Each structure stands twice: as structure tokens, then as C-alpha cells.
Length: 469
Ligand SMILES: Cc1cc2nc3c(=O)[nH]c(=O)nc-3n(C[C@H](O)[C@H](O)[C@H](O)COP(=O)(O)OP(=O)(O)OC[C@H]3O[C@@H](n4cnc5c(N)ncnc54)[C@H](O)[C@@H]3O)c2cc1C
Image 1 (tube, rainbow, N blue to C red):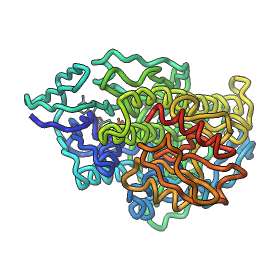
Image 2 (cartoon, protein in one colour):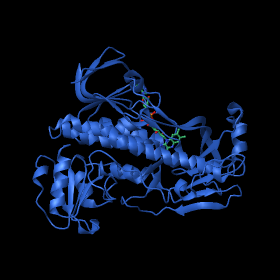
Image 3 (spheres, protein in one colour):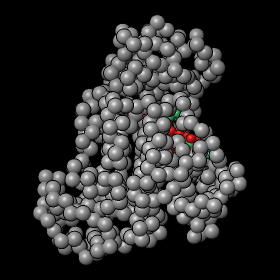
Image 4 (cartoon, protein in one colour):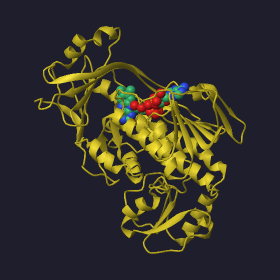
């Protein structure tokens, strides 16, 4: 029988990423996947700066530099192809990296699997589970070859049809979006001369809305909305696909990598934990891909869980810190999905198909409040609380690799509040990042936990935060 801290079911991108960063934090783990190799077809195509920063902080920067490309623009165009709303994306954002980059998911998945194994995870590819039992203190997992694993926790990163979710009885709530889209990935031939948009463009056409995404290197993605009563099998043929792509690319300049019909829907598990069993990634939430957030949200789940597991295994925090996983992640992911749903509705609305009353600015994203951690290990009502701390090399260094230290950012060195005596915390002096505050407490996942105006307030915040840790 194998004994580890965490059993992870699913070696897709979320499970492999979780395993990788747990190794950095000294949390032993096993990853199980029924497939011997990662899924070979691209689904996720963009990664945001929060996740990019997390990957950089966990030593994957070099791979990302060679295998991703910044997106430069995002537009919604109307039926006549004129831009209704759009913006250039700056080359570097608040996280010190591009705000969004394109990648090729099979390559990302393969890198993450390799990193997990190289950093010490026990990998069990080509295996599945048949049973799992949580007795409140440990989880016993039985594999299809009869082997057993004892672990403190079990995380179901087993995708949309999650065995874990069904086995535990955790439910998905339907957030009421349901459309079929045909997703087509193409690769331009070397030297091909084409006239395609830069970045992402939502074509809000009345007869058939579609999306274009400039993928990494010569990859390009189209997503075509399937119309009521249409025969998807006829649409998804060589002839049907080239007809859809007519006027943009032809067989003389590109090859089709794959095409598949997806049901774009919006669901979330209102509770992502049952006892010592957790859901992460698509097993816990699924979003229409208009905002490119499905995998990003799943990797956020992984980061959120990882540092909490680490604090518990090191004897720094009690298990009750794990109860904040659902309360922190569910509202955040709901907000992320709500934006994607609004984007989908805006596409129909701007094409003059259906009026959903979506505000154009907010549907696009510009005027929309970013999702943030509303409840959990956060204190106070300063607007920065619950949001990512902007990039600072010293803060990044402090949370880097071991990934489970807090940072106290101040204008001058201060003594760490007594309430934080048992908390791993580093004082970083960075007056330029404080925006008038006396101190900012940054969590191991780089979210702002508290903003204090003076030492008394800092002590009060520390006392509240310390009740979780
Ligand atoms: C068209 C499209 C475009 C998208 N674009 C984006 C985007 O731009 N950005 C973004 O962030 N997201 C995007 N997504 C979403 C993204 O692809 C998913 O959110 C992501 O792949 C989910 O990762 P996961 O690891 O949770 O699940 P999966 O990738 O589904 O991995 C689950 C793993 O679990 C394994 N598994 C399942 N059940 C078992 C079992 N019983 N036993 C053993 N192993 C099991 C599977 O083999 C698989 O390896 C897009 C999705 C689609 C469909």
C-alpha cells in the first residue's frame, strides 16, 4: 500500500499542475490517469497573467517563454465587420508578464505531466480508481489493479464527467447557458500568406456568429455557433469546414488539425469539498470558452488548495483552513463564468439576433469588476483585498518555489505582529507598491489578505487572519 499526503485523480492540466506545485511545497502526492499520454487535441488556447505568474514563480518560465505568445488585441465586430468594441492588449500587465498569452494545450499538458514526475510525484498513467473511502482521518483509494493508496486528502481533477463528483454526490448547479459550437483548429503552412485578425476577434454576425483566435506559432482557432436545427455531422465534414472557413483560409494555406462540436455550457459545484475530498478544474466548474477561463480557473483551484495543504502538512495550520477552499473559489469562479456567459450573450446581441440587455462595456470586460476573493482568508473592505497583488520581484521571490509563505509589504522594516508568530511570513520593503497604505499582507497565492492603515490596524488584521492559520 502506498501512503502519500494527496491522491490526485486526473493527470490533465489541473491535476498535473497541482501535483507539480505540491512537490515544490513538500507535499507528497500520487497522480492517477486512465490515459497513458495527455489528451492530444487542443482545447484551452489562452492563459491569463495570474496563472502565467504562478507558473513563472514555480520555475516554468523558460518553457513559457519558448512556447507561448502574447495576444495583442481583442475585438467584437458587428455584422458588417466594423469594430464595435476592442482594445490593444499591452505587452506587459500588472503581473509583470503579458496579460494573456496563447499556447497549444497538448504541449502544456505534456510539460505539466513531465514536471510533476520530475519533481517527485508518483505517477500512475493507464490506471483508474474503483473505490474511495474517507473515514474522516484518511482516504483509502482502490485502483483498478487492486492496489490501494492511503492519503490524507483526495482531489478529483477528473474533468467534466468526474467520477469523483458522482461518487461523492457533489452537485453541479446549472448557470443557464447552453449553445452548440463547432470548434476548428488549423495550422498555417510555413510561409503561408493570409489576411487574418490579430489576437481574438468575435464576429457578431447575424446568420452565424463565430470567434477567431490567433494561436501560438502557426496555429489558428475558429469557433462557429451551430444554428437551431442544423445537422452538425454535415457541418463537420471536410467540405463543410472549408465552406465555413471560405474567405479566411483555404486548403492551399493551411491544414485542419481537428474539428469537434462542443456544448458550451455554464455549471458550478456550489460546494467543492466533502470531508477530505475536493473537486478542482472542470470536475467543479465548466464555462463557455469566450473569456478563455476554464483552465485558468482550474489552475486557480490548484494554487488555492496547494498552499493550504502545505500549511497543514507542516503543522502550521489546522485542517479548518481547508474549509475556505469552497468559500473562496466558488464566488470567484461564478463571477468568471458570469462574464463568459455575458460575452456569449453579447455576441448574439451585437449580431442583432437576440437582445439580452448586456451592457457592451461590461460584456467586453472593460468596466466589469474583476472576480475577487469575497470570503475566506481576507480581512477588511479595502478595494485591494481579495485581488492579486501586482507583480513585485521580492514578493514573488518570497512566495516562490516553497509557495507557502505570507508576505508583509511595508514602507520600512517592521516587526512581525505577535499574532503571526506561527505563520511563515517574510517582510518585504516596497513603498512604491503600497498606494498610501501602511502595510499590505499578501497570501502565498499572491492575493491581498489585508490592507492596514497603521500598526494598530495591522495587529487587528493579523489577529483575524491568524485564526485561520
Ligand atoms: C473549445 C474549448 C476552448 C477552451 N478554451 C480555453 C481557454 O482558452 N482557456 C482556458 O483556460 N480554458 C479553455 N478551455 C477549457 C479547458 O480546456 C478545460 O477547462 C481544461 O482542459 C480542464 O482541465 P482539467 O484538468 O480540469 O480536466 P481535463 O483536461 O478534462 O483532464 C481530466 C483528466 O482526468 C482523466 N480522468 C477522467 N476520469 C478519470 C478516471 N475515472 N480515472 C482516471 N483518469 C480519469 C482524464 O483522462 C484527463 O486526463 C476550453 C475548452 C474548450 C472545449
